Image (cartoon, rainbow, N blue to C red; front, side, top):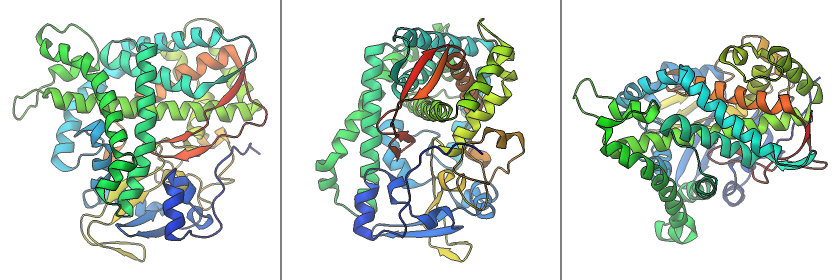
Length: 451
């Protein structure tokens, strides 16, 4: 038996259009109903959008792997994320995506070297210094700490720049605003709200938030882009500055580099922060799992600096993280669209129809998991079919930074658990919301006691 972490209780039946509009403005999780967790495929028809939700593993494989060209990334997703990400690998398709992925590949080969590990470790050490400043047994809002440390890791590994605390708060506040307003903008588009009204209701606020983040990144990138020939850094930005397109002999333009770094910042800090927060939450609820993880950590390295080989040895802690990723996948849905007419099970999709593959639903589906809502790290001792477990995506578009994220997460968790015992604040229930990522809208209040 495992513990059963909180998740939003689904509605007993499908909501009507007006209720859907009101519920999903805040979080797409609020619009789910009981059948969502049992169905193999479903349809949500809205005034401006026809959306098909696919949970069937065979159909998921068709969409994400076998017929991937027939189900490109959603145009609407690209439009929604453009104020922050520009034209980046996260939302592009076809030849543009292929070229961008190829140009980014050398940068991610770098993430395997020890220098990146050391940068992650130094960010984790600074995080631990911040935690040690609290009196023993304090209730700490750990979500903001996870968001800061993962953003700091990205700044250090991509741009060799520590994240300043004041600048960090400004960027992270802007990102929260961008997430909230993007969720609202999406639902307004689904319901054909006119653009002028959308601008009044928050679209301008969203654009400004995206601009704040891009300016912070641009201020670091611009001088290095202009002086790239004398750039002596050994980081991901340096790799991007010197990467040349084999077919054209051209380097990335400044805007292209800014777009890719913005994407790496979003995908690299936000998703890992979400996953770490939910892992700490699950461990705070499951004291047996926490003790088991602690025992493993101190048996490998009781009090020294963790090495790469230490992190690779932490099999149980890795399973803990994988199980938190199952229960709270950071990207709860992958948005695609049908390039032409297509058939999904018994449903016919028209050209341009929206298609959603939702890890949130697949990871909690009654047909695919024993006690799907329970936290059971030992599930991951066995091989799980990729179509049923996909926190990093599936197929050719699987997250390019998967190895980076896993290594970073285990470093951060091992540091925290070795030094602190975690207990959830009495009576605290997280407010689980689905926006761009799955987060807790009221933070995560955890009592941290020194071991």
